[in-house]
Image (cartoon, rainbow, N blue to C red):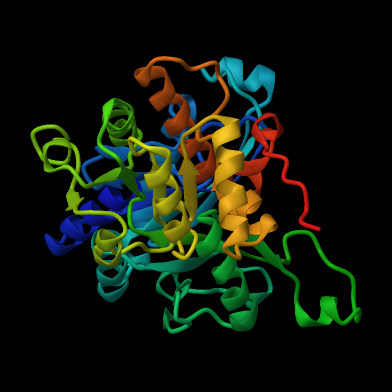
Length: 383
């Protein structure tokens, strides 16, 4: 079950007066299973939705969830999945993973409504959760949450650290990556005394955005395969085309939106937001360049363009002549689009493209750019 579905299911259960708990991976080191914000919902009848890694790990999380429902207090679990322990528990990976288990009471009705609204209708925010109170002392579950919207407004309250959380939330929203922050007390920071083990306050900060939306510019064979693979990987899909016969529900049943019209006139009708992905796969180089020029003016998180290295280089030179900076082109544009896996057929090319989407979604901008030097385009600086 995806993260948005977990929040939606929690809302449904709370409305029906049911109790439950939510387990979230808040930190991981090494090759620990699942992504950094994986979630599992545990209902009062013991059934579950979502996953935080499987195996015996989830059995212990399940038991902790039962205890949390009874006590009403959150609990942080740490699993050291060393090679031997991982093998004994049925896991083939190692590493260390921290999981926070919270009762439904930690999420107020207003907070859930806000989260579900962002997930369903767009927008972005960052949700801060106190994982380990540390020097803050006893903090009730319902006082451990702070939602910081992109415009800086907020819902909820966490004692102290407001400025730090606001600053970090901007980065979390931009990169789409969660993080576990650690804060020492004022006395420790001022050097008045030494830090004691377990004294720091730990706060988990996770981006809250709509499920990533991929705009496919072009409705040809490659785009059709990209739509299939992207949908399977949990991305939403929209198609932008100037040919109605190539952009319709019959051809793209998985797409939620179609924007049909001539380039560039159609662009003003496309509501691109910060979390969105733009994949430029039109039927001609000229159209690709027109789309890329517009795409660079949007806040889209990811921009990719298909084509050979020579075609990409020529496009970059044209855009540089129009005033676009070389650094911006090399930093923001993934071209040729897709991981280098020797792909040849439309299906293989699509898998390489969606693999790059996933890499970027999971590792963020910096991590998503690492290890791809082989497809870097070398632009000589203008004299």
